[in-house]
Amino acid sequence: MRRSLFFTLMIVVAMPGIALAAEPGGGEGWLKPFAAIAAGIGMGLAAGLCGLGQGRAVAGAVDAMARQPGAAGRIQTAMTIGLALIESLALYVLVRGVLLLFVKWPA
Image (cartoon, rainbow, N blue to C red):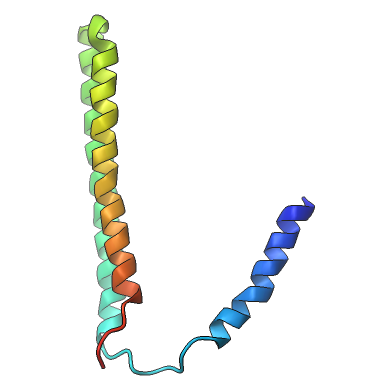
């Protein structure tokens, strides 16, 4: 309890310092709002579609395991690898969105 309170207080104390250390406003140009919108829409689409893909993959794997219980271990391994690859697509979009938000755009 005391440790979480300490870290919370440190964050509250440190955040104004970060805001004051930022550069003066301006110089961002007109692309910054569009970058924020693009990052939000891209991450929303990626998360939603990856969720649908993962749901279909798990449903197919469970159906295959129900049909052939003897191959359940191999099916589960293949499903886990597939889910990791699907999730990596959402993580790539997240990284791309963060780069869009924090890149210095020309004025």
